Amino acid sequence: MAPVKVYAPNMSTAAARVLLCLEEVGAEYEQVPINFATGEHKSPAHLARNPFGQVPALEDGDLMLFESRAIGRYVLRKFKSPGADLLHEDNLAESAMVNVWLEVEAQQYDKVMSLIFYQLIVIPVFYGGKTDEKVVAENLEKLCKVLDVYEARLSKSKYLAGDFLSFADISHIPLTHFFMSSPHASVFDARPHVKAWWESLASRPSYKKVTAAMSSK
Ligand SMILES: N[C@@H](CCC(=O)N[C@@H](CS)C(=O)NCC(=O)O)C(=O)O
Image (cartoon, rainbow, N blue to C red; front, side, top):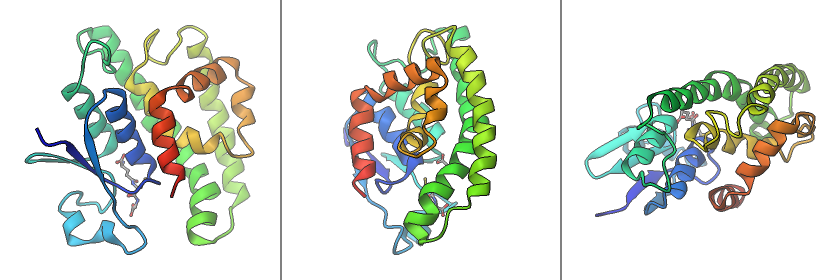
């Protein structure tokens, strides 16, 4: 069987979500680079993969998918094994909790983290612009409120959906990885359960492999 193809540059946080899933389940895959500098993500060839001109896209035979969380679910279902079950779909209540916390990640966490990421990394590194500290401060305040909810949750269970690692946890890795090397990482230190949760995620081989590639370009 031909390996699945992931169309994405290394630096993409949404693509990293998919690569983390592939690593977690030990799937064979090929990463096909997309060059943002030349606008390749807006080319007709890539628009045929993702009509919004974004990355990632995943190709598996005749199937072409976009949206990293949908791709992640597909990968985790397709390559699920007894040692790598990150959706817990055999258990109705557990899978419902995975979905709850995946929604929290997308609707609460990602919303504020991506604005902070944009200001701290994208504007200065890719556009040579100046970070708007007011936007950072406003969103840090919102992030702290979200993290307070996480702290309460993680004082009751080791991971977000329960005492098992799930896609809900993994999905937080890409943006958090960048945030933790920012001057604002101390908001995690102030919340011991959130900090321990993050340390356990950051010790995973999948984290080390995918984030090393993200930082390489
Ligand atoms: N909701 C999408 C977001 C994808 C996304 O924003 N990708 C960024 C890179 S991380 C991108 O392609 N940006 C270029 C653009 O929007 O033109 C997903 O999760 O896949």
